[in-house]
Structure formats: structure tokens, C-alpha cells
Length: 208
Ligand SMILES: [Zn+2]
Image (spheres, rainbow, N blue to C red):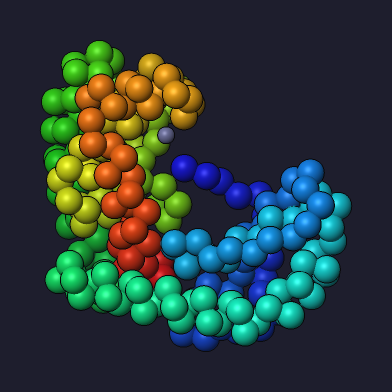
């Protein structure tokens, strides 16, 4: 899962529950681009030397674009939530604690089941509620999972567990890594797609 370098405050308020900052990644590119990520965060790609003030001016010019894209995403999310029968409401602290408890058992059981199939061992299993990742695997083999996985279907949870276990073999997302994932989780592409299409709506129940 990606990490981003800096955050910039938006030059205007979007209102409601929308984040008031954008994520900016600078690289050796020549132009600026703007996209709305699935999690409702605006993401700017910019040339390395471009000043913050110029990026802010760029965003100011695109206020209408930002608003219309947020509105469209919100509508899509609402439709998806209606279809899945999942209430789009915010989760309370108590609900999150319950999810974390369930996640500990559920994901540990899956890790115990899949580790021999992947052919690896693992260390500690930690459950967190995170905005940017569903799981991770440290170089020591400790696994970390997002408690919000409990709102995903079981086969999607299997995929995340297998994905992180495969990082015990390959600490990257190379073709070799995906071949390992595919060996134990043949439908991993469908699961990735599921997260792409529905992950944002789940994360929004906490971070939206
Ligand atoms: Zn990974």
C-alpha cells in the first residue's frame, strides 16, 4: 500500500466530513496532476521543485472540479452501500473495539491456516484501525491487520492475510510475489478489485 510524502492544506473548505488537506507527491515530472482517490483524499503529483504556493494556486483554480468529483464519488458510494445492504453510517468507538476483538481471532485463525500453505512462519499479530492500509508485514515477520477488514467478505480477508504472508517470501510486489499470492489465492485479482471498489466506503465509516 502506498505512502505519501507531504500534506498541504486546501485553500478553501469543502464542508461536511471531507478532509481539508491534499496529499502531495513530488517527483521528477514536469506537470501537475490531480486525482481523487477512493478514500476521498485528493492526491497531487507535482514536479520536485514546485513551490507549495503554486500548488495551492493550482488547487484554487480547480475548486469546482474538486467539488464535482467529490459529489460523484459520494453518489457512487451511496449506491454501492445500498446494494450491499451495508449501512453507510459512522462506527462508534464501542463498535470499533468489538471489530478489533473479532479481527484478532478471525485473522489469527486465517494466518494459522494459510501460513503452512504459503510455506512461512509469522511472529506477532497486531490489530489496528488504520486509514491507509489493510495489512502489513514487518521484516521480522510480525503481521499487522486493519480491524475494518471485518467489514469485508471472508474471501477478501483471506486475500489480505495471504498477501501479507507472501511478504515473508518477497518483501515487494514483484511478479514473483504475485505468483506466490496466486498459488494460494487463485482469485486474488477479484479480491483486489473488491477492495478498490468497496474499500473506500468501509474506511469512510471511520475516516470519512
Ligand atoms: Zn503488499
